[in-house]
Amino acid sequence: MISLDTIRNLFDYNYWARDRQFEACDALTEEQFLRPLGNSFSSVRDTFAHMIYAEWVWFERWLGRSPNQTDARGLAPDMFPNLTLVRERWHSVERNVQMYLAGLQEAALKQPLTYLNLRGERWTYPLGETLFHVVNHQSYHRGQITTLLRQLGAAAPTIDYLVKFDAENDGQAAAARS
Image (cartoon, rainbow, N blue to C red; front, side, top):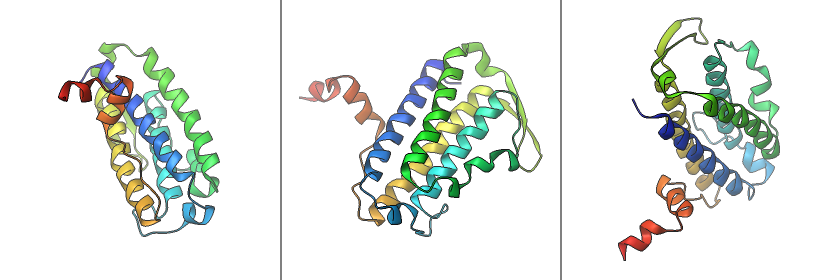
């Protein structure tokens, strides 16, 4: 089991990488943002909407609720006709997740989390594993966003974890190499 500090760090990285991709998406036209490109979630917008939805669903589960499809109607892709609305909604979810993480204790990571998935099936995992799952899930879809940006001819930002680390540590790792 990874530590709570590591989980918090991974969530911070998650939001840093997301924001860099948002900045890259500023260069897209609305048509490009919505253009179906044959991905598992058709467009940049649809992929972001899925990521928001997944993070929101898990946040609800962490609070002891098991949302269903009806509960999440406000997170359907068509509710986000532009990047501004994607940003606003996701920042709202982020604030809630960050407050939740700030209030967690290390011992909670090993506690079981039981929930009903969207098909009504009961699942139980250690809480810490579900937190890790969310940031891993988001990394997978950030890779898709990178591909979609490139397909649209936009510059995809570098979002490697160590790029963030170097930025926060004034390039100390790079300096140590020389």
